[in-house]
Image (cartoon, rainbow over all chains, first blue to last red; front, side, top):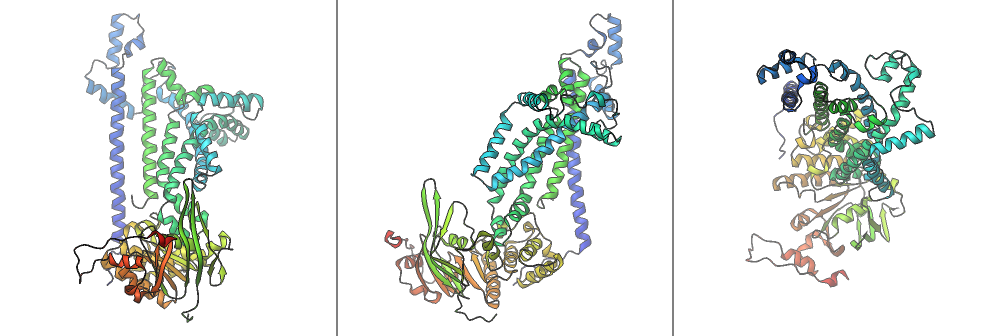
Length: 355
Length: 282
């Protein structure tokens, strides 16, 4: 009669097999990461060799005599076979040596240590705004599909997506900084506070808070809020549209009807059941949006005089500063891989079928 | 629960479900009337005959833009048409519940089956998490699951179809409703498992003295399982008759449906084709 006389696995083997499965999953993920990083290194290295820029010439200048040129070429190791150069390059990268920037005459790693936190700050707050506003907006739109609130959400999505950020940034500065004076102007910190905060993490607000400079924290926040909102609107547009579509898919599922039959409140049905399922693909979308902002948004950073990665990379590119370009690319790539890995693991945790 | 079998749980008079779509009004149910006591009432009909819409209307789960109207719609003397959404919701699960077709889709994939059962109990009863779990384990046992403690922690994709449907029954009966609607509860299951599930359903419904609305398109099943049968076509009841008299049905539509059934003892070269008379819907 009953067909459920299946073997009774006692607790320990079950726990063990679960640990084993997780170990295998983690192993697979890490292998993928290793291969991707190798590919990234190879591509950046080859770009440096393929680009029609002579690194020796960039160092010594075009008026250097032939023997100086040759000496520099030897010092750079450019006479060695390509695979050996690659090995040296990889070794250097793993020792944290990305070379020296021609433009700033500083180590690229030091440059990135100062510009990346600025971008990190902006991207994190932008994504936070995107999630905090975009997810509820998307849910509301899905629940009220076709009604006015859905239309409002659609307009916000369309506007957020299609208004160019440079225009929005300028208008924001004009309105909220120049006219209304609600927010601070360009830059990360007012000049008055600049000497109060010594960079430790490079995240101005965190540094200021650690040093107890609360006025500087507030000042940094008012500098950050406008550019972060501009990026946030883009994020809100993307995340709310995706949330809406995921939620509509989930709300049509039979288990949602079952949850309603049980007599659950609409809130429990939508947030407890549908959203928990929509969360799985949503993690990927949020991670993608975050990564997009972490690349550094050149336009926003330029308009707000924000010393971030996007601006640094663009400057380096325009000045043929190869070490800086490659170093920056490497960092962006590594961040992509990291965020991707994190969102993969989070997605697996949220979905028992993928565990 | 020794209520007399003629006690009326649900009374419907002229139930209508209309969908106002941009291309016109679609009448899913057009004037259905019946009463349900503590009995097993079967509703049969083709796809699109309004069987499922009737059950959704009773539960107040007709999706937008559907509109439900009725001259009378009463649950144990309470007027359902006059009730607000919140009161209708409180009836769901606690007083009127429904077992759905396919457990693969009607259980939430990211929640353990045990939690889903316990949740159904806790919506309607003030109970600690521990008490709800104990109740759920007892309920799993009642649907003849042998290792309730183990199954409690499984996710829906880890249980078989038959076990999933038992879980579904446990979930929908844990709050001890008066009426259970079973909307094709065995259509998605293997034939061998179907009878087990029906037996469990029958035992629970009978022992608890509940009213059962059994929706199906399987005439044989309804005949052997139900007390009374309503035959629906195009959103209307063609005829209502005791299940035992289904073979002697008079209505041409019911006769037509019966004529389409293959019979092992009397094989025919060609099965009859169903002819539908527009006059039935007038």
